[in-house]
Length: 203
Image (cartoon, rainbow, N blue to C red):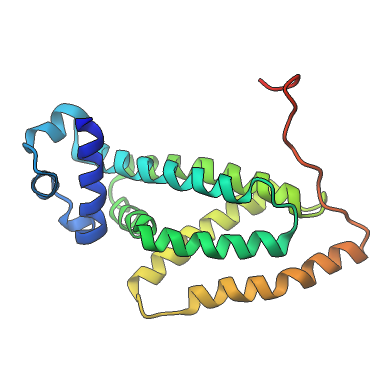
């Protein structure tokens, strides 16, 4: 489908040339189609760039849900998240995210679009946290904080690709996870029950 082909070309252009190089002409050249098709199918360059981000985000979200939906303890969750983070980097997803976050600073409409893409990630984080943390922990607020931190640390890491501190932070979190879990158990605070609903209550 031509729209998917255009979005894929936009993603690759963002990944390899950054926001500044992701012009409609560069995207059309990479995809091998007429530049006018960008505006015919998407209306504007910004709409196309957001579509490219949305496409990648949905693919990565599906992958995250597949890997973490049955995890119910914090150490395992953090171990899997470290693996998924490596996949994000290899796929180019986090570079595209970082480029659009940076490019949206002076473009309110683009910024709102990037924030909208973050919404499902916050919900996914909340669901995962409710399975592995004590009931007393405000999962919704913590989920938002984690997603903001994750986006932010990846933005910083792309300013200095040789900086290994983001990876070190993830590793340190994995090391501390058993301690946090033990503290929760000693305090008599069991993890939250699963929030999934059976067929009878599904909407």
